[in-house]
Image (cartoon, rainbow, N blue to C red):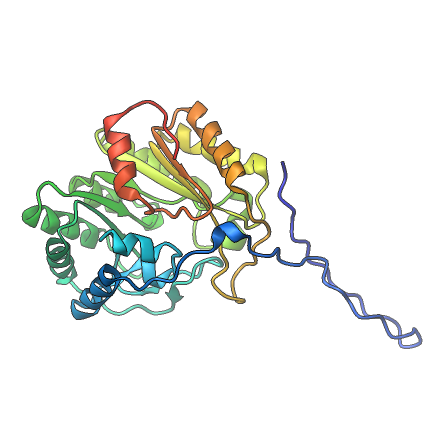
Length: 321
């Protein structure tokens, strides 16, 4: 089952003597958003409480910055994905809504503020991610480690998941994070290798896979996780290849979700996958031997992350959600 490609063509100028060309009709029109992607607007009491707390503590969440469609559901369940190291990324991925440019200086006190927020919320599972900080020597690895350490001081029983950048392939930076003993080490593969130059020009497909394999080698007791977003022009077989490559990198947990275009300046949606297709991909992943697969149109990397951690830790058999 193949997803259609977006083909870009260049119009050749006609000779002056020729008749003016007819209007050019674009060969590609974005598909209409299906009904299963509609979600209720956020606004419950827990949502408003968490939003106010984030502003008071000068913290950021990827839920807001990436315009996640699940923000209302997750915040009502008192679950949020914290985004450290500011809200400006040094890279410019063509699918991502996070701002890019020159970030602010590194704030060494941020891990303490984040841990205070986690304690106030009484979270049992915390997800921490960041923008890319290629301007820092270790890409911000010390901040991830600091957050893990500070949370454990306040809530020793709380599990911590970190969704890290690729650190430009630095094993030194990865070691800093792994030595802090996260319960889950997550790095998203995002898309097929063929689309990396278009969608993720600052990243490298093989570098992402090597990081995940190295993390498992550094600490076999830690769970590893990765995610793929579908709909940017990949072929069905390329998705299966991504899953196979992640399994060879000894990844435990995989998330599969639908790409939603943040704005007209971002890559268009080439295709919307149906819930049945997500189920089929989850079944394929189960047969490959993943511990847990979360696959649905609205799935994001940290969607129901607390359930993923519990399922992956308690059952080594392949599982899909």
